[in-house]
Image 1 (cartoon, helix red, strand yellow):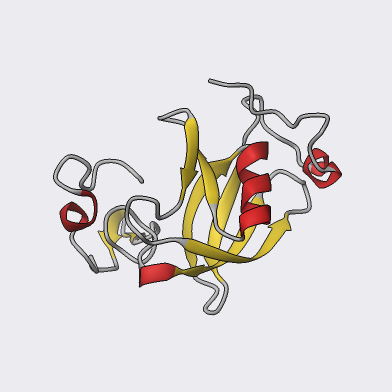
Image 2 (cartoon, one colour):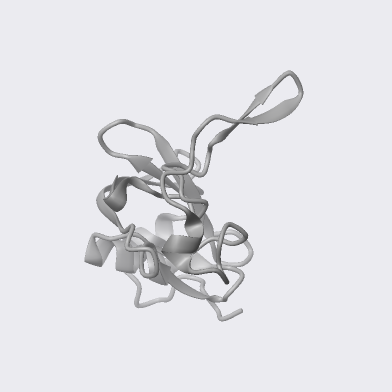
Length: 145
């Protein structure tokens, strides 16, 4: 994986973040209007800086080892209205407007669509749009955007 730790020429606000050993920080996307938690992904310094500059969510794909602009394939971009840092300085919260109403690669509004009930995970949200029609047959519901 490329070096994703903050650079000396990065804005000072990036240096306040406690990056993990891989130079990443977890980022939670929350609907700015409803407060619903939509998804969690990883960010490196570059993706967080781009998110702040562009006003659209940019994440770091660990599986692909590259930047990932949310919605670049699906069209379901996240317009960022606020970026917050938690008290331990190791989690980012993005308050977003979720374009198209779908944040999850399974075609649901949120990635958190399963709830523990009586020792079993129960699906609590329906698919809004078939993932094959969003990503094509090769992507489907097995990997995120």
